Structure formats: C-alpha cells, structure tokens
Length: 194
Image (cartoon, rainbow, N blue to C red):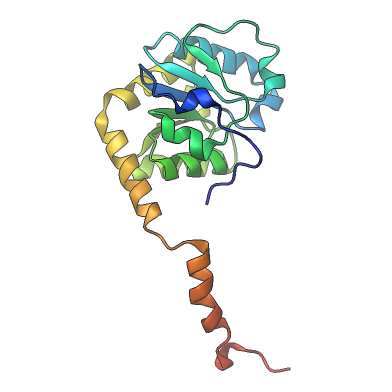
C-alpha cells in the first residue's frame, strides 16, 4: 500500500502528455550524497529523447540547477503512487517506496541502484520482467537514455508491468488480511497460558 505523505499531485500531471511521459527521481537520500552532478547529466541526456521528462526532486535541490531544458518539468516532491499512473516509464534509484509504487502503478522501470535494498529491489524488478537495471558502474547518461528508450520502444515491459499491477490489485487489502487473521489469532490453542 503506497504512502505519499502530504505531497500533492500538480494539476498539469492530470493532462495527458503529447509525448511519452517519463518520471526521473533519485529519492530523498541520494540527492544529499553528492549526486547532483550525475542527476543533472542524466536530466540533460534524457531531455534529448522525444519525451516529456518529469523530475521529482525537492524544490531546494532543484533551486541550484538553473534553467531546465524545455522538455523537462520540475514537479517537486510528488505523490508517486498517483503521479506514476500518468507516466509511461520511471527512472529511479530503486528505493522501496518508488519501486513498489511503480509496480502498483504498472509502469516500466529503469532502476539505478547505488546501495543496500536498492540492489535487491532492482533485481526483483528485472526478475519480474517489468524493467531494467544498470549496476553502479554502468550508470552513465548515455546508458540511462538508452535504457529508457528501450523501455519505451519494447511493449513487453509495459505489458508485464501492467500484469504485475493487476496481480497486486487482486491481493487482499490490509483490512481483509486483518479480518482473516484476527479469528485465527483468537483461537484457544494459539493463546499462551498465564
């Protein structure tokens, strides 16, 4: 169940794009770890594709960038669970929230993991067939643009991502799970004495 905090979806994201819409985000941790140069290089290279690039980073991060290419829209912090439903692909760091929101939204993913859980999440996305990953040593602006183009050009990624989203939607809700587990937990043979 995705959680977005108090982030709001900009009205312009509800307008269908004229070109494929791709979201670029590196989460909340990586921007603070000296990745600004990489992020700007990725943004510049992705802007050469025939896409609408939605950049989801905090306003204070983007304030230091200067003017953006015309095909790039800075959206600030986004409720990714809703925003990704308007996108054709997402390029991201592999954090739990972003990876799962993209799976729930049925959006193909290009994952650029840097450490810890991001690597496992990237591998899970690839195993599912819903996306691609680049290892840390492979992350270059050109490789990211090529991976993004592949996601958009090969319809199998979108088909698999939609299938994963449908499978997730068919799972019981947390409330349904509680209704099932509560009677089981109250069974006398499961209670401890004293």
